[in-house]
Length: 443
Image (cartoon, rainbow, N blue to C red):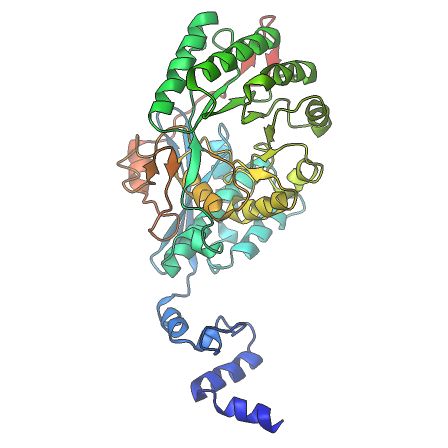
């Protein structure tokens, strides 16, 4: 007991008083739970004292949603304002449902305003589980945008890039795949030649991957049999053109049934694709299980899942080799980190779905920088190619990779009034595909 007393007597009085106060008030922010290099509680270190003087108590004052036309589609951006003058930016990933997402946010904004912006997990739980019915696709997309914005706020308040809050980065750069394309009409040799030219072009620019979708037989028309045969011809031609060192990804986009999916995946096995994405529809993973048992080609799946619970069967039964979580769709950064860790337990890699805007790309980048089980990140085109007046500071592309941001938070800058005034929402119809007999098939 005397030895313990002597050790306590050497502690600086200010720290001693602080520890005593913490025992009485365990809910205070400065609760010392670990020690710094000096052996003193971190809360008593000079660095922590400076941080406590500069880090404001950030309360949410407003939440606004801006659906915005990017020239090809609508994106949905969310801004979370605070009484400290800081603003976090998020993005929802449910294309075609922008107004529904905006309505969800408007209906629930009163439950967020006035809350501490640092309580990210508590806000997530409240929004997802606060009602009798858990959030589904529209709610999950809205929650994702709010969650991303809150993480952006936290990084800005602390003055560090987001990946530093996730334990730091485990890689120096993040490899990407672009969107390669051919025309939807013409078919046959024309489609193959256009696709090969696109893949050769992006490869010459430094991209390490190529990726394209299952070919159509005309505008808005897809027949499974001809599509499978055309896709096999495309994979063969692209592999011959780009060689063995560039990875090939094909997005089937849930357009095939089991039999056609098995036929396609078996036929492309000799060409070594990195993955075949969404070979069958996502509503019934039993179909995916049978496809997986019939082929050795790696499968990527998961972009339709809007929470960790929806990933349960996919990950636990290892029905895919690559987990296609979408940061702007599955519950935000908070949920994505949990899903990535869950996949790591099963030695599965994440290949985030990211076809939307710069905010989702930035959030996905920070996740991938800190996730040890990362494969490749979707990036339709080089950042900074469009909307530069709305996004004056964006991410750095280098030889087919994105580099770690150095600015705090997400590391990008957004001018909301430019989005609102120059790129307003444009009503559009959701795309559809039909077979030649007029029946609907998955787009």
